[in-house]
Length: 192
Length: 244
Image (cartoon, rainbow over all chains, first blue to last red; front, side, top):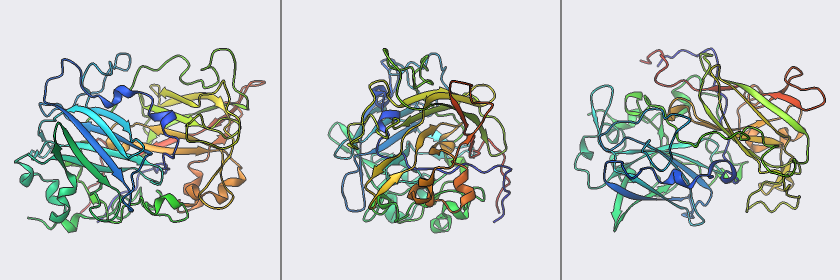
């Protein structure tokens, strides 16, 4: 393996800390990612963050990034008219509650096509911040009823016995995604 | 089919720029990492599959006082030492990063956050909310006016105190360049005892989070100026010599 060091080095990450809410959890609309005109299947996504002892993580922040129903990523919005809550931009943010849960209202993303032409199964990218995380973590959410999961090139990189940690399951009207930071059933995290 | 375990490399053995320049996930002197740091290695995601080519954003329009934390409460100004914090956001090639959203939050001058869970017996300031936002200009520059935050105690270990700091959240051009960090002040003696900072591998890396006093930015008879320049990771849009 060989790589070239760039002229500058990125500054280090530090934890978001316990008081992230005053800076980052200020806009409830960031949990609702579509507007009245947005095409696509609506879904409620409930994520629960737990630690290595199985206890809820009540001070995590989750950001989502996903394609629209057609499998396209929405471009950079106009800063003067980002229109939160009225149009779909593919980005959402929510903090967890006292029991480690947070809920997003979004649409089911379409399958996307990678630059190399491979088809990527419908998925949502997740960025997770919390007190106790000196760096944020990346993971992905897939959907259990998707018949294409066996062909997804990202899931193929994950040891078979850990793939289920990336798959949300349907529970009534909602999709449930347990996010286990450590220990039994530890969620797969990615290095981008 | 390729062996998936072969791809299970960690951040430190993949990217020479990140190796030795970022904190580990597990750092027991910072107690909260012990039950929250994943134990399994991160799985490297090739850039083709990382959803990196599109910008990621989502925020409301920036308000007139969003970058001046001393003018957010009608009727008065916060107590404390007024300061200006400014700098430039560039990538690892030194290219300015325009249109980058920066969000900050901090304690007040007495070391107290306006947060329901902060029960440090120091006074709240009726004229200080402690949060701000700004978007970088065409040359990647940003500037805030605020007050210098106070040090405050925490329960990590006996007699633990955080050095004065301002939290920064920064969006670059993609999910990969997302960064949350903390800015510190030069000469703060508490830095030597702080697990957040000692988690970083060496003094040179720690210094990248320490702002510097700048007498050009300092405004006479008004406010001290501190420079905090921010280098973000490159992303897939940045050519990076292919590893073999």
